[in-house]
Length: 52
Image: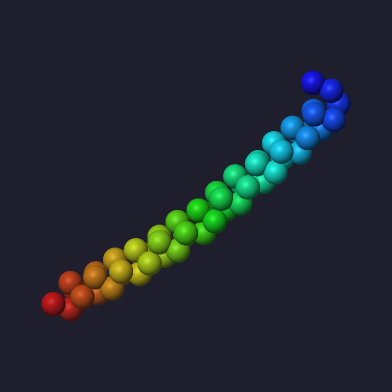
């Protein structure tokens, strides 16, 4: 491979790595959101069971 091909490959790998990072960042936000919702539902359920 010549220098130009190596540089193109390097840029493609960096772009792919950035997309993967963005994917996991978005996934982390979704997991946080789901966790917060579940915690809220569990808290409400505990209150409901206590008042029953």
